[in-house]
Length: 583
Ligand code: DGT
Ligand code: MG
Image (cartoon, rainbow, N blue to C red; front, side, top):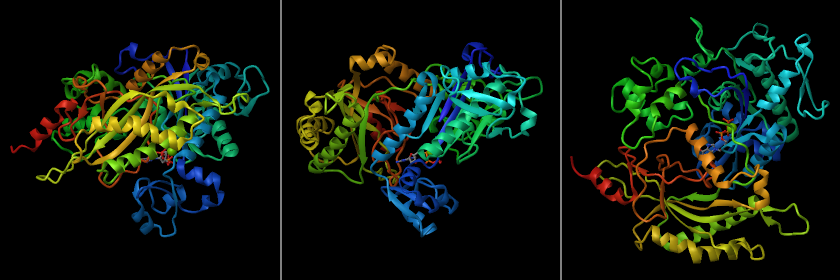
């Protein structure tokens, strides 16, 4: 979980390079990431598992394991057979049905929203939250008594002065980066950044304590001034710890900023917002070879002769690359991230269910799998979109209606016989208006799923794959998107226009992630969207359902896994032939 605290005094962060306009204000962020999340969900159900090495299995992979298992040498994304060999008494539980993880994730999110003033809580994946606690810190630093800091009281409700917890405002709670003697870093000025961070560290500690004792989950936290820094500093003390990134955040004279001190040792690839292709381009530029195995750090890039936004623009820019990529990267290398914590939504922007397959190459098996996915999709729609709070409507009312049905597949083309390399292809999608019968609550889910497959999905599939056979799919995904909320519910989001909310989400995500170069959209039929996926490993395909991102997929050009160029759908075949042609 991460919380963001903004400081209205508009102190400038990271003076070094970005122009003033790039730094909106000074914020304090804390991140909380639940420890071994899926494993913890099982431990909360069965506390006896806590003392045993526990691994959660999806397909043939350990998707996560508890810290007892990690002590014995297991780790995330390990093959089950390896885990059994390394730790023969490992307890393995199946984690392919994500329902209980989704429910736990929702419970934790609602818990955080109930605490944070203004509800500024943003989910990142299943088990990470950013919390914008600016208002809470403003208020609580404002009521500090500088003469009696050790007997402070943190107010959780501005209207009821009895709600809150006592704390000692002469010490940070948890760890700090750099690690320092607590007495040497005790701030006294209530409006200083140090004090704001210190007060936030106590709120973070309190929330983590409540989570552990009331709900049963431990979490790891990070506290700083942006989502980027909070997320990274949150990794320093895992599990069940928290770390505050101490000021100074700007270099003064000979004293370097703690932000640089902290970031400089990070491998470039570990920085959120730097994708693997961008990291690769930076690495080959710095090391001077086309393909490099060596990982380079933020320091290596920052201190490379001549490095700056213009050089980054030259290295990373090019036809179709997003405007200003050089400056954006330069900012990230200095820990500058102005992205806001988004106010939580009560309904997701889309619901999507998927599965991956070793081999899926007959229409009958596709139909069967589509029915399975569609049944899960309808169940999820009923769980996430039905409002059951009104007793006079026993079945509940739809809080939102998705307008679009989308089918995506990921074809697996034959391996390149010359090199033995398997092409890693991206998804191709087709969308159509969602038939209204899907909202009929009197009909049972199996019948609805069978009808949706028969009347819509199979014909969408045929349009995506017009050939009768010869295709082999590694993935199917069925999604409902283009969510339109019921009028009354829209008011809950301060009457915001939904389209604007989608656009805002995209803008913020864009700020958070540096996208790879995009090409112009496909000229072919408008319903076809092509989106990217990271290159797959033939063995590791653990994700049963796709629930990482509530945001809508953006239609972008498909990226060639060999040369990285983004190619419109219609040009895929020609491009593939280009690579397979003899030199
Ligand atoms: P941590 O944070 O290191 O203590 O461990 P976790 O298990 O909380 O790991 P995290 O925070 O990266 O991811 C949260 C959950 O998401 C994790 O419990 C299992 C699932 N998960 C993580 N990575 C993957 C993945 O690559 N594939 C699949 N299918 N699930 C994943
Ligand atoms: Mg986690």
